[in-house]
Image 1: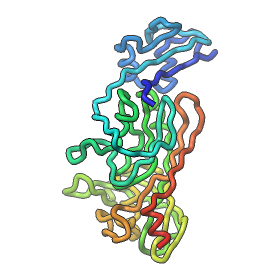
Image 2: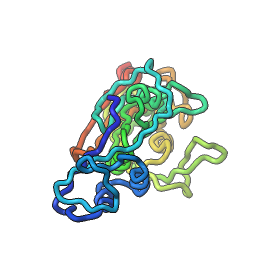
Image 3: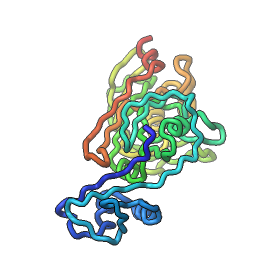
Amino acid sequence: MAEIPEIKIICGNAENDRRLSDVLRERGFSRKSLTRLKRTDGGIICGDKPLRTVDRVHSGDVIIINESQSGATQPNPQLEVSVLFEDEHLAVFDKPPMMPCHESIKHRGDTLSNFFAAHCPGVTFRCINRLDRDTSGCVVVAKSRFCANALQRSCDKVYYGICKGPKLSGGRICAPIAREKDSIIKRCVREDGQFAATVFSTVQRHGDYTLCRFILETGRTHQIRCHMAHIGAALVGDDMYGEKSELIQRQALHCGRVSFTHPVTGERITVNSPLPEDMKRIMNT
């Protein structure tokens, strides 16, 4: 879907004779978004006429929001990524392992943002739950600033990972996470770190390997990887917090489910991604 999305808002009785800026703020628009809309020609329309944020609206008014878009990332139509859910406001992609979400010095043209630029020309890539390059699974992408702001507040994730080590029955890991000294990327458990909590349960066991289900109470960098290594059950293949494995060429971590409240319809939506083949092989070998 390549259309530049528009947001349609129907004013309710409680919003009658209120300033548009107040209505939009309560609907989830940030101050920055309102400032951009004021500077965008035709950014806010009611009845085919431009509307200012200081104007008052009335019950039943249909407000159309057109956000300016910029697609600076170069499209790569050769990339293949499964689309799990999509409408004119957002999309959920099944990111394959070894694909970064964003471009960097080492990765140009091979990222999810490059795929999105080809899939939705002219629409800015707004990634809600960025995954590490090696981590696979659900990635939610908003097609407007409004949807991005709203999704940040309502998006819940469920991860699946394979650990090697002691038999795990599940529990809650509550251990502060800090940046490892002399490292930009690596994290560690340290008393002066930020509060972090991970809830996990056992899904399947096979020999020394355990497939676990993870729910994050906080969203720290490398939280699952760091916490599982902390309790002596590092993810299989995680050479940063554990060790390499002949069974898989990455850390065995997958975002298997995302749930969110749709920013426009208000519907609660759940999207699932099946366990990838490289992780299935470990549990079936």
